[in-house]
Image (cartoon, each protein chain N blue to C red):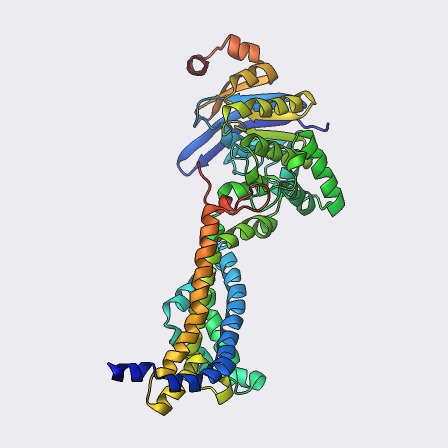
Length: 242
Length: 247
């Protein structure tokens, strides 16, 4: 699977007077999975959104394969970066199949038959091919998120961003979606996963980054982040969530 | 009491005017309303897109246009456009008051329809445009393939209401002067009422208006209910997702 390395350097981002990111540094090697953890409001989601330019940083840089994404055409960047949202954000006026076909046709300019073929292949991969003719509302939350993941993967991105992908799911559906993400990680996709699932971070991540107050306070392999946290802020956070 | 009855519901007058109402008036009223609805919808969608633009020099004209044409009484616009533009229009359309009447009605409708579309498109959950943009879709593709289709569906009831208003307002072209064959429902009823000194023909015209507008209001209610409660389509599919996103 093609994949990219990602580097975030001294990234700053403000909403008006509110500084949400205050100098984020993060390196995600090609083919690895980084889980971003931290209290709500720490800037985790904003970091993801700055990586694919849904938000414009005020300072600092995001590098994909060593090339700055700031100033490049955001539409071109986003073809290479898939994103999965907490609320799925499927297109409710389109069938499941068309949710995948639309961007394949509109962005990648695939022919109708090629788009259908590819869409079905990815829906099969995530286990919801039988839902292809239905509207998203006919699906469970877990199935919807599978469709959203398939929609992002069908664009064959180099990097996948997951923004609390399981937070809106019923507890019994979380495991299946996490399993899907685990498989993707093992297949060598470069992934940045914002999550509250500490078990997933511990077992799947190559690197865990702890964010607080707009900065990466501590990052390292799960064994050291969970096993031997250095900062008091991380210790306090882990005390609360574990 | 019977005097009152004779004034408004004299059957002989009503029977006399009805064929004219149906043959000439209904057709003319519907021509005016449907043409203006079509043109008004196209202009309105343009206005909505201008109003939603990132560029100030597109938003501003749309804003001013909407304020002006919503703020003026319909009759003022109809007279200004219908009489004022005759110099320009005469070489093209001759003395027929319909083209300019339709234009005036469309300009008014566009102001309202534009606001309806804008509100509908803006009410689509932000996550929808973010998902589309995150997939690499352009601003235009996001608008036309994702936001407009969802926004328009939500405002269908409001659009039908706007069409009802057009059916009623079309009677105002009367002020532009109509030939016998050009008379709409109101004018036919009004002429017959003036000739007979009895209001029954106008009541008859009113009944034809109601025959158009009342079913339409029920159409509105029906669409509204379907959007609200959801409608089974395929596999328990519903339209409930067009409600604002929860949570």
